[in-house]
Length: 78
Image (cartoon, rainbow, N blue to C red; front, side):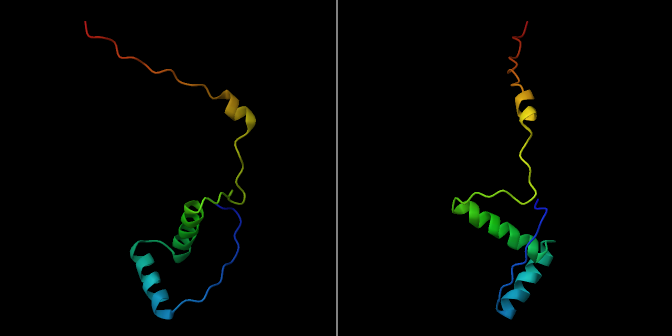
């Protein structure tokens, strides 16, 4: 989740805006949530990588402490 936000202002046909807001409300989502998801999907679709503002990569020691868990073979029946 992003920790910082920036405003994006756009012009849209009033009828489309009303239909969009109604659909968002039916899905229990805010228009902002849907637009943010659309933007993330669009960037991903076009191969654009990004790091959300405020996101921190895992600490180096956290990565090195991870161990592979060996697969457990089931015992044959007796």
